Image (cartoon, rainbow, N blue to C red; front, side, top):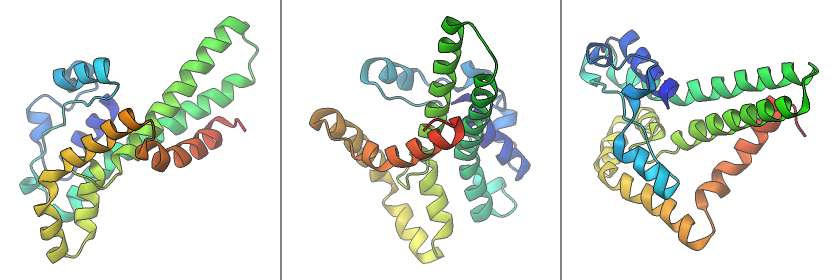
Length: 193
């Protein structure tokens, strides 16, 4: 979450919005990005969230375009992180290491790839408050984007419903949708078949 939120703030700053920087949120310190309620939900319910970096689209030079770019920066940073962890994984596979150490390192690297791919693809879902909703809003013609924005208040409930429904029914729609691209890129980045 730290890298994801940092790149939202960094990109917003580059697009003309200094809000995150002025509030001390343009940092890689994970403590600055922890949301207490999100952390508690993660511990007790298996899902959580970080504290979103504050962004003021009124400061952007080109608000619709820049909001899309800033929204895309978070998932892109997760995707790039997954790729980099995959490169490290593939490099270390060719180096002889003690088996107990290599197992621990490889499991950690695979976990980091999966976590970052999961964050990247999950955040691209076009349901508010996820990044994908802001990207879709910017891609829609203006009249449709206004109508889309009107229903964003229902987004958190839809998202929560999808998460809870998967926990109660044992059939996770999110896993069905996100699982295939995550598995594909895990194999691609790690070199595992």
